[in-house]
Length: 602
Image 1 (cartoon, rainbow, N blue to C red):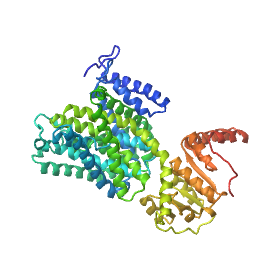
Image 2: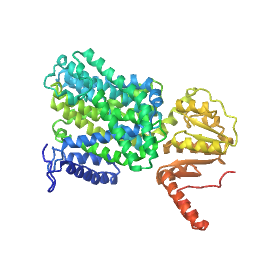
Image 3: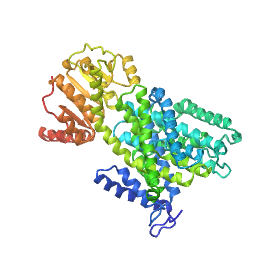
Image 4: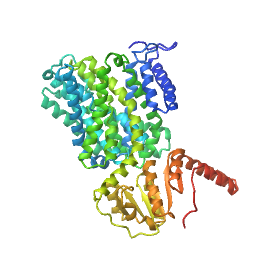
């Protein structure tokens, strides 16, 4: 690899790569943030600057890719900690046919473009497939930043990604078997590195035909899932519980990292499953443990640091000269990735009856490509199916789509309230209801809790212990069934849909508690509830000062911002120990951003 030296440390390419990658990513990420762009832009540009296609220092690409793989493993493990197997199975009816259909449509678009410029069919198939599979890392970071991970669109997107990953694993295994038919050369390919199988337990049964390759791969996947579900549930949580009882935070953090990395590596080496998918399932198994939140917190710093290196490593692969040499083909590749994937996924979601804002969330989530696309394009070149220019186009399209994706999500966040209002208007004009007739509650002087996630469930526990009457508004069927089994009043649907607040008897309620993370959706809900019952005390959650001001404008009485509330609790405790007067405590309350605009009800 060209130039792996920095300063006087030629013997330390790993340190040089870390220093150059993280240091430059920090500088350019900060600059991008200053310009109100996503920090991802800075990370990608940092990768371009230390890559082999620009003058100056060149980092070790092989090391950068391995460090980036650690980021992918830790990120997917963290996402798995917030998911359950039931969440994944609940979206299978759309995720499986939707992912397959979207990949097929985009592959056809790529094939049509390559046929127009005279490439062989094999090149077109590989090129189209590489443009059809979204980057897991980019999607999940975007959903987390926009707090969309726990929405319908977010859950469908994660299930969709899992199906795409499984499809790509099969593709990487079967492509060498089809290479001869498609006009490639299987003999010169480095298959072990490309298809992620490595030297595994199944090498004694090396597949000789397409059908045996398919059967062997499906068998390995089934064996991995069975071991994770049956054995993983009995082994992983008890290990963490034992370590937690030792009282050593260092050992607990080490145990979490060892499980995440160990399962991911074992999944890839023994079963041919990607690192990312193996780590995701490890996290999902651990999510059933009471220690899942602590595990997520302990891995967060490393997860963020190594995720940055993923984007730096992507930037290192990019040759900026292709923008000058092939601008038209780069533009067409970019449009297929962004418009083709988004349109196909959104259209499929609409066909399944999902609202437009859910369909758009899904479509924009998939409107970029990443790690699997690079692996597939590299395998295509090794098999002499895809020309090197095709790999450069895939990389250029990936970079551009990753740059644009955060901007599209920001636009969607602003557009979602308008889309919901438009759907209600259309439903009213057509004289139809969006949902079946809602049965009104008989509760009065009660609390209306909107959302039963991590925050809402804790609030519900408090209401239950205080024997206060309350009902929950929730969309997720799994949560709804659990609440009804416990005898809790539940109204099914989105809090902004017509008639739902009336069914919750907001006019006679005492509190409205908005526990949903999306500030725009929460603002719309607060505005409607305040119009129905001006005396209603409205409590909401926020993640920033800007969100506090936004929700206050719509009539929220009490807005809790997590970080400041923690600071207030600590300060109150300290002041109570020294017999502080009441006034300083009130000042701390203001610092906590608990915004009171009218007296407490009752």
